[in-house]
Length: 75
Image (tube, rainbow, N blue to C red; front, top):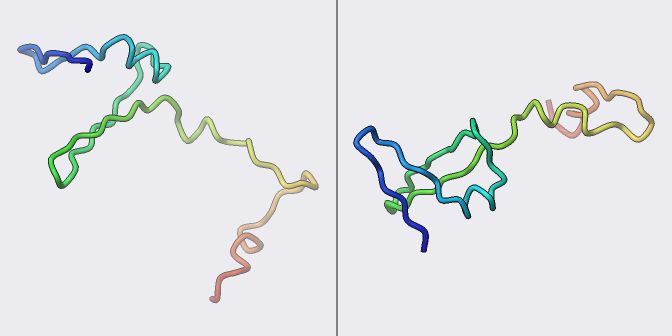
């Protein structure tokens, strides 16, 4: 079990094995979630949605219109 202490400024240090496992670096943002049952989850936000831009391409290399993407919807 890894333990850290909250100091008088409300700060703590994330233990090194956790930082290594999450591949974090200085400036990594942590997202804290308080669950209804009182448990807390913490996630490292290591990527931005902008990092995903351009990774998907149509097989023909052509772009697809919004209308074509929504063709399955009943409007």
